[in-house]
Length: 424
Image 1: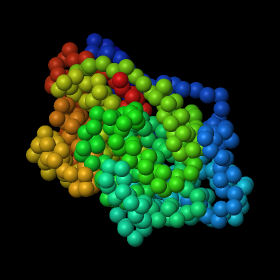
Image 2 (image 1 turned 30 degrees about the vertical axis):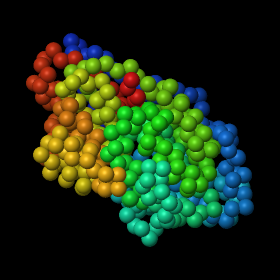
Image 3 (image 1 turned 90 degrees about the vertical axis):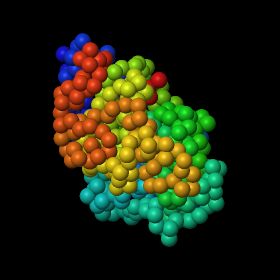
Image 4 (image 1 turned 90 degrees about the horizontal axis):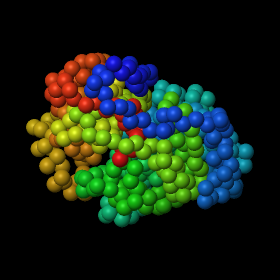
């Protein structure tokens, strides 16, 4: 019996897989990557060696105000480490500059005060000006024309009116933008509702180029790059995280060049060779990305890549925050079947994209080909079953269900962290 500990919420879950069924574990090198430098030293090194850009200190010279875009509560960016260092570098060169920290919520709900303290630390929350972006509030946005794809470009007014705009974030494989980080701080991070929906339209989501680890000719990425350029995103600090959400590398500098360097590094350590298995077990890497079903779709896409036709995907995710989006939940639960829903979504035009349609489309795509079982003891099972998936309180219960579907001789592959893996 193979006994493995996998990420689950803020800890781990021990799972047992019978030896006769177990094909093996797919694990990115990020899980085992080690460096002699501390997390702070990694960040300092990146900031002192900017890629394709002047240093942060030189960029802030003579500026009266600036905005720092940061990630929200759904992203594991270690801002308690990165933000104090960024602020130190800025104020060492320009003590009087007025700084606003803009939380890039995209289409997510606003980050709560408690979540801000957990993410940034009490000192930053008490002393700094922090704003939550709200995609649906037109009065807080400014129109900058049109995206290359034709959608209207609306971005946060505070960011656009700042003398200097920079962003912090992290780079990991992303299931339709190729990679997170860089330009994603702007679109969808601080973009308006119409802009996000146009960028995440059904046509683009269906593109074979809009997949994990792909940037070249990815239509979603191309729109995002244009938005970042129009926003005049001048500088980024993007970190790469290891198994325990610790910083293992960092890239700073020009928003395009530094991001590309980071993506190259992530691709090198995240590529894993897939296989066709009857049952694929995966996770969303634990908290915060496993806190709802909406986010858990990301880990499912890694399993989708190496699951045989009509295979079973077992997703281990706490979903402690429930479904993660009312429209996401209602659209899935009110649909007759994933097949009918997917066919309907593919007929929706770019400018008629509905909130969360992209996540619905990807989940529906997966469910048309695979049975999905979510393992959690922290979520109402009714939510899961309403959304055309199965629920299991324990991993053993999930395996028993999967064996009933695929047979006792079914081959099983484990993807330890579906979010950090690029399955080829």
